[in-house]
Length: 415
Image 1 (cartoon, rainbow, N blue to C red):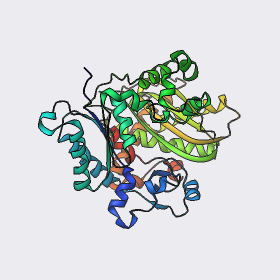
Image 2 (image 1 turned 135 degrees about the vertical axis):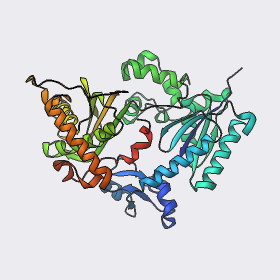
Image 3 (image 1 turned 90 degrees about the vertical axis):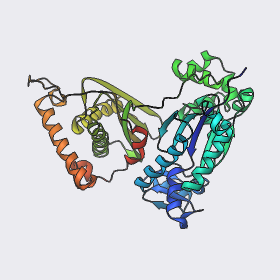
Image 4 (image 1 turned 120 degrees about the vertical axis):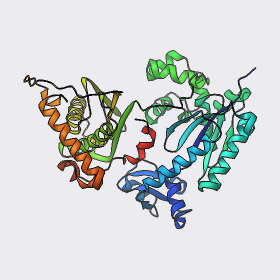
């Protein structure tokens, strides 16, 4: 007997843009984008013209001359995102929030109170629409992966329930890019060998997938293509990393661009780490070139870091190493920093000044301690007067185009 489909994936539709249209009814039905130099989110009306998140504002206006840019109301995003998740929590305590606007829920234990999973999903949708004024799509399936795919198929503003007896028939007809882990690069590689649907991917041997995508990715996608997904919900999930990224359009890979951008990103990430007293030991950078090829490099440290300047210098060294490996790449389109292997309980360990070559990058050295003290002073000023009240010169003087921290806070709310 097949296991019942009791996993829900609920996803607020075009959330940031929908909130803006809710707050300003004059924007309803019009193509809008949240952001400015870069599109952070787009309404469905804008998406119809090809406008997408991460696109430069110039490219977006070229595709849609009538596009309306709005600045973003982060406190309202948080308020309404929290309210939508609370609606889901009224039906089951087993809710795993994975971002500001989406969550999984397992309703297996509450059907005797609220009806079938499909009825619960329909009630959630009605309540979110009537109480909050926002559209939400819900997928119902036996596994997390399939529930998430079902919610994507349901968009915009719909409900899709996948019968356990018809899972593969539903799944194998869908485009491969709906799968978790299939981004633009993977999709391009699969298209090159004639794979456009999940069914076509499922018929490939794991050996072929491993050769094309690598052993780990090949094994994972092969399992998901046959709906083998044993992952359970994690209601009390804690963030395992903190990161920020900056979309740069097509920008020369010069020091004048890279250094202030990395300092700005390091400032964002390190501030969050200090606020929660959770520094990390592994620093990772990602560089995306003009052809959308991304390269990552990481370093794992002896001592955890949360100092802005130390993080910026470590990231700068990693980015320089990447550019040295790819000397023909002169144009970059994105820079990103993340810190992982976060400490649960942390005290700054003091170090004697021993004249080591990397002493300036050691958090417990005299230089590291001075930098940490300066960071804490900046944090206190910002807490009182706002983020823009003070900052590091080269980063503050540049117009930052990073994705604002407020867009990521809910995904890392337990950091």
